[in-house]
Structure formats: structure tokens, C-alpha cells
Amino acid sequence: MSIFSWLAEVKLPEPLADAAAIALTDVRKVYVTAAGEFEALRGIDLRVSAGEFVAVVGKSGSGKSTLINMIAGIDRPTGGEVWVAGTPVHTLNENQIAVWRGRTVGVVFQFFQLLPTLTALENVMIPMDFCNVYNRAERPERALALLEMVGVADQADKLPASLSGGQQQRVAIARSLANDPPLLVADEPTGNLDAHTAASVIDLFSELARGGKTILMVTHDLDLARQGSRILTVADGRIESSAPADGPAP
Ligand SMILES: Nc1ncnc2c1ncn2[C@@H]1O[C@H](COP(=O)(O)OP(=O)(O)OP(=O)(O)O)[C@@H](O)[C@H]1O
Ligand SMILES: [Mg+2]
Image 1 (cartoon, rainbow, N blue to C red):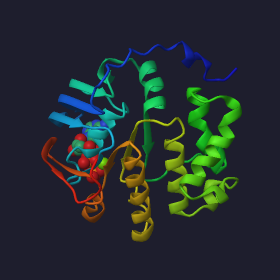
Image 2: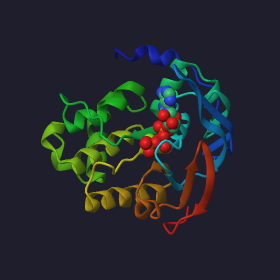
Image 3: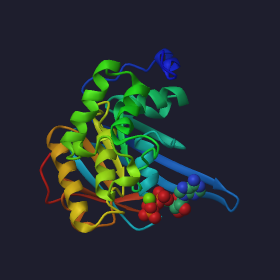
């Protein structure tokens, strides 16, 4: 019996067949603050196909994090529709979103967000315990295989504090892949890494996209953004442009 066993009761709608990896229609987000209402997203329409590596760029405060948080189900739209791989994320309740996200979206953060008292291997196993997609018996082996894939299998038994930033981010990427989600969302994943390490993390994302994962990555670094397949520029809560990058074609 897992502490997460209540999740088994949560039912999700059957995804539509042949749907886009991501489809947003007129997505709006209004934040209500003491100073009044602020419209962070002002009508976003977006379609992304499976295997695209989309770099999201734009000035600070333009709405990049708000946008990807809508797609990852971390935050909810005030209006409009968010479909991910045929699931209407905007219609799910909180429990459904938790279960759906665990299976469907890998999330990578700027500051890694590894649990400090767990080893690298145990960190990678957490989403597996949460979602029960893989049998308990196969989890350690799968976690080790993922650490191997991102090049840090030799760090499996160490605590995050004894790893370098680049190694921690690799562990975090392995964790994001734990349940083999079709979508990876990363908010400035290289913001805390040196240029060389950042480039190797981007290479890893490119490889994952070539393997069919859809990747959305916020970055302030235009050189890194160009390594993706598409550059999406956000300005003032709207998509200002969406253009092919020089990177691998989807
Ligand atoms: N929880 C919140 N409550 C109120 N306003 C918010 C909230 N989250 C974001 N905002 C506002 O919405 C706008 C967009 O924020 P967002 O975090 O999406 O920007 P960003 O493009 O990711 O910026 P940065 O590059 O600095 O991370 C900003 O003006 C921000 O102040
Ligand atoms: Mg942000």
C-alpha cells in the first residue's frame, strides 16, 4: 500500500485520438492582486506537434512562466482552452490534474528542486511511486537506467548537496522522465549553469526531442534558444512571433 494509493481512484477523461501535442485556444490569465487585476496572458493561440523542441523567449514579466505553467497544469487559465495530447487540461479538477501531470508532463526547474535528504536515485523514483505506472520491483533499475542516460549513473547513491549544479540538473531531468511523459516543460533550466554545462543540457533536450518527446523550454539565452526547432517570442502576454530555429527539425 502506497501513501499515494488514493490516486488510483482518480479517473481521467479518455484523450482524443490524433490530437496535437499541445493546442491552446484564446488562453487568458488574470491575476487578482491588492493593486487590482493584471492580465498576464491576453489570448494565446498555440499548436505544437509531438517531437518539437520549442524555446520560449521574451522579456522578464512578458508571461513566459505563466504560459508554460498553464500547459503543465501548474496554474489554471482564467479563460480559453488548454489541450495536451488530447486531454482538456482546463476542465480537470485538482486531483485529476495531479494524476494527469504525473503521467504526462516532466517538469524541470532552474534550481533543480531535488529533495535534499534523498539520494539521486531515490529522487528519480519519487514520480514513479506517485504514479504507479511502473511496478515497484522495476523502479530502481529504471531510475538507474535514466541516470545512465543523462550521464550521472555514477552519482546514484549521493545526496544532491554533494553534486555539481550540472549533475543536479541531470538528475532532475532523469526525474522528469521517470514516468516516460510525452511532454517536458523546463523553466530556465540552464539559468543556474555555466555555458558549457548549459550546452550539454540543451544537447540532451535535443536528443529527447529526436526521440519523440515534445519540449517547451523557457530561456533568456538566444544562442541556446536557436538549438531548438522553434522559437516562440512572448511579449506583453501575447505571442509576438513563432519562427523555426536553426536546430533539429521536428
Ligand atoms: N501569482 C501572481 N500574482 C500576480 N501577478 C503575477 C503572478 N505571477 C505572475 N504575475 C505577473 O504576471 C506577469 C508575467 O509573469 P511571468 O512570471 O509569467 O513572467 P516571465 O516572462 O516568466 O518573467 P521572467 O523572465 O522574469 O521569469 C508579470 O507581470 C508578473 O508580475
Ligand atoms: Mg519566468
